[in-house]
Length: 130
Length: 134
Image (cartoon, each protein chain N blue to C red):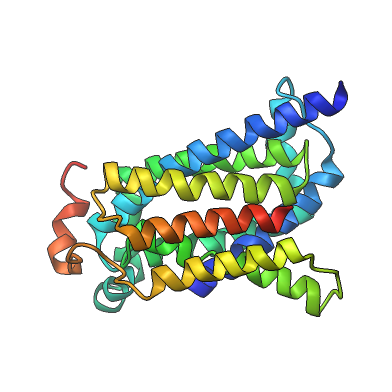
């Protein structure tokens, strides 16, 4: 019974980490796309301008909010099961969910190469956790 | 930047795991215990490493697509397995080697392609983006 509750909590946390990470990743990618190349910006305008520009972006702040939820879901999951299950399972689901979300919301051209990469990495991460 | 993402993320996760083992099981009825878990030194060091991951990740996302950055930065999983085998002398099973091969192939696939699938915006062009309603 305790084992079942532990597994249920772990998988609940895995689903939450994947969902919140995916939302956070998409929002952060959108923020960075709006802001531009950080390295180039830092070189031309300095650290303060880069920091202010990042911190004033709404997508960045929303993305950080979702990443915080993903972080606490990860901590919750880690309190119920090992990192060898929680980490790879959440990462694999996030890889596939991000490929779909990037195509839908960021309009990235997810070609066969990128689908293959996402699926290979997701499968590989699962095998490494076995 | 991608190597920063690859190194900081798995190390940070491992330290969080070690710290959370010391903190113990937390139920959903104890949200404060979850918030206070950051007082554990291993969790705190894990968070510092994850901040390093976050900075590298944001920089990488500023010049490459999400679907490029995520698979390309997943070599950290391979790195952890290799450290376990070489430095810690742990047994790495055949399944895990197969997993390493799959992750490496995925990374190889994506890194031979372009980083972005649309023209990147220059910092000057993007200057207005920070002030415009987003």
